[in-house]
Length: 163
Image 1 (cartoon, rainbow, N blue to C red):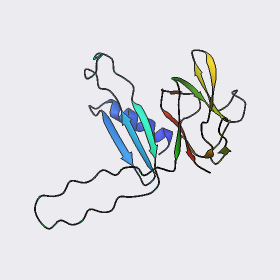
Image 2: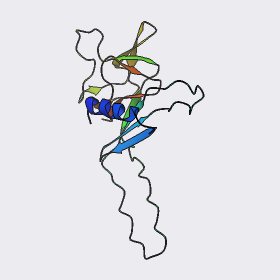
Image 3: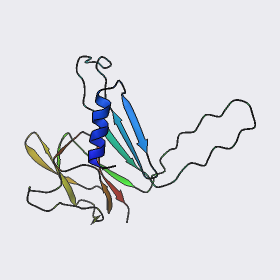
Image 4: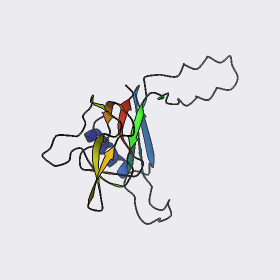
């Protein structure tokens, strides 16, 4: 699912009373959630939708065993078995940038192997440019944010595969 499709999904939800939707495939989970007016502490402010991603290997739960009569068994929720992937999260609220300057190449690209301590992005917060260093070594599997997009504290930015 690309960014354009995610934006369309957010626009479609804006006219409804649906607070959260989750879409899964074999390798990813996309959850769009928002606080509906009148349901939170501030009540009179509508909050923008929040999009979160989870990347997990293509491990599907076993199909439920056929029951021999009686009440139907509830479906078990599949837990992501992502013990091998590493997520780099935003350490602050700000604006995510993939490069040091608008005309500079990205600091990292999908498929790159990065080292612990390597600068992977810039987050602008309160007019300060903060270099974000990786705390882990690995191969960049996915870049979850688009250049010049806002980020929240703890929001996933990159998915790494240990090497």
